[in-house]
Amino acid sequence: MSLMDNFKDWGKAQFLDVVQWMDASQDTMAWRFDFRGQEIQNGGKLIVRESQAAAFLNEGKFADIFAEPDTYTLNTQNLPILATLKGWKFGFESPFKSDIVFVNLKLFNDLGWGTPNPIIMRDPDFGMIRVRAHGIYSIQVPKDKDAIATFIRQMVGTNGVYTVDECQEQLRKTISSKLADTLAEMKMGILDVNAKIDEVGDLVKQKLQAEFLTYGVSLAKLVVQPFTLPEEVEAMMDKRTSVGMMAPVMGAYTQLQVADSIHIAAGNEGGVAGLGMGAGLGFGMGGMMAGQMAQSNMGMGQQQMPMGAAPAAAPAAPAKSLKEELTELKDLFDSQLLSQAEFETQRANIMKKHGMG
Image (tube, rainbow, N blue to C red; front, side, top):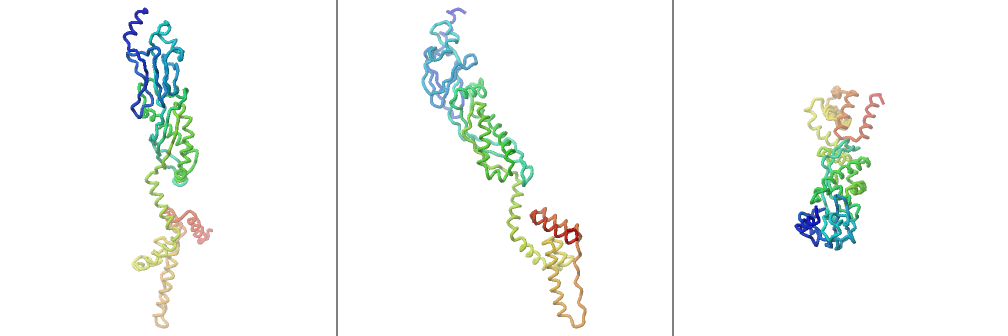
């Protein structure tokens, strides 16, 4: 191609005196200047505003990055790389072409994140459980030439416009991964984790900071909300809470139930003793109270019987085997009416009663 052909091609293009980015959006992180039919005139102006940076690329390689707000004159004196661009090698005051990518350095605040799938963790109280987490975080591209270049390479690529939503797709996966690693390292139950939720957030942020910088992004803030438990775990917690509230008055509650059952004992097979033992209340307390009531009834009967008459023998409560008593004890423990300590104490008493202590 002759020099005259070059001049004809330049004449067809629109020469640009000012290159700038007026961002009216709220979610654009990077924008590539559109040079279709346009060329930058030698001595043209590049305007970089606060919270902006501009990167020049020649044939896909970085020529220079302007990270400070200012108005720059584009010529070979302040940008030596331009001397090697097409057109400049002829020594004429000719226009040149180059890719320019503007990067938004502002803080993108309060972005939402959540675990796409439940995190499986080992809990000392509930065993293996699945939990979900969510929260907010804030990011920005640092005012650092290396970070800006990394951001363009790793995230923007050849896109004309790159938004924060596109960036979040990658970052959210990273948050979930580091959160799962942190929970495994802490080795704490879910109740303790929720009680120290701020500490969890700080640990996850420390892990994420270096990871985010590999994308050219800085993590300014990370907030982890309390974990959401499965419905079955919440139901188990409610049940345990109810049992714990009843524990201090469990003995009085048992006695009251036995006393109330005496009124209907006559209509139950086995009498008062059978009713008390069948209900499994108090581990012998029902039988003991029933025995006391039976003795009281026998005394009243003896007072009413004429002298010389033999008192009627009270029906004896059938003795229970070791297996039956242990089975009833285990049923009460499985129903969470007894703590582990109470279970072990009562079990030892039953074994001793049967000569196996």
